[in-house]
Length: 443
Image (cartoon, rainbow, N blue to C red; front, side, top):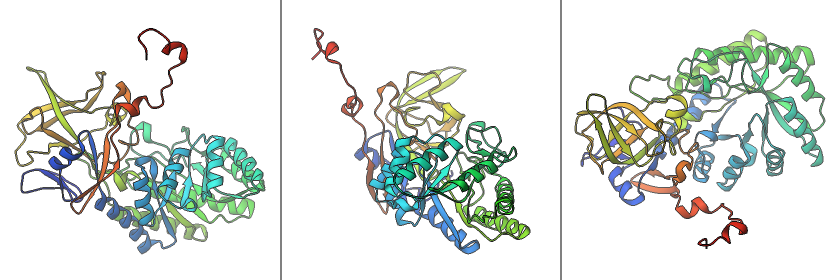
């Protein structure tokens, strides 16, 4: 049995997280319920910051908000001394509401809207990670109207393919993200940025992908990017001072997964940058990284209530829960796999092999295709582990299902950080035209 952070089996034989019994959590908050282990999140933040402090003191760690962001998460990240990687106006707005300092935000995105650029400039966002020449022109015009000078990094596609799912590879040449290095596009963008009056180019950015277990591509990307920084210096005379190598470190989803530790990543990346800079004779840049999944992934557990159990003799037993692809679309999108337990009977050995199905009206709404569980019964609590990243963030109201509540747990205390949606919430933005509401029988 593999549990993470503060999770354990308590004296009642129940799954306990952050000192909170899962059965008690369900009784108070209902299901589905996202449970976030606050102590593990803070520990992961500190491991990144302490790891780089030991090996590369001029480093900053920016939490990737897309993995999981709420006002409470923004406040926690601020307390832990993190920077913040944001990718939309909505993430900026959420972070500001949570009290996160705008100057510690890096604004990413491959198609930033003019309204989002305006919000970022007016809020004082510290860095724009510019993805393309169109954005560069939009930013120059918006900054000029405000008589500002926006600090930017250019996102470069380094031509390095990480060994991960096709949908979450981003470092290869054929990607919607970034300026291609090998065909001269990136250098042309550098020259263009340096010619602008209201943009200050301070560095470069790259990101090779997500859920990466092999550390060598991180080292390779460091070498490629330092050499490009040196090329920029030789060809333009400008020494850029910041290098952002993105994020992507993988986490445990099932027992077979064996991701590298945060400590091993911080050491390898630090050494790779130092080695490449020494070989090129380039002054050490300020180093930035952007972990998301490895901060919150293993810290999340989703609790469900078991409903119908359908046995097809000789074929499969379907165990249905009160959530599904609405609160976790990753199995449908990526074929993601998870481990799970019957949270109210953790001491009992697995006796049944089942498929965990969601309640959405889709045959593809499967959370787990095959897993051994303690003989489940309707009303049991099913805990699916490692759901802290990209579950709440990607949740939807498909089939008009209300999105779940989320709680932070620590020291035996559970704090609500996202309230459960109601049916009233589901229709709050609907507009019923007068010509339709005038029909007989419609109030």
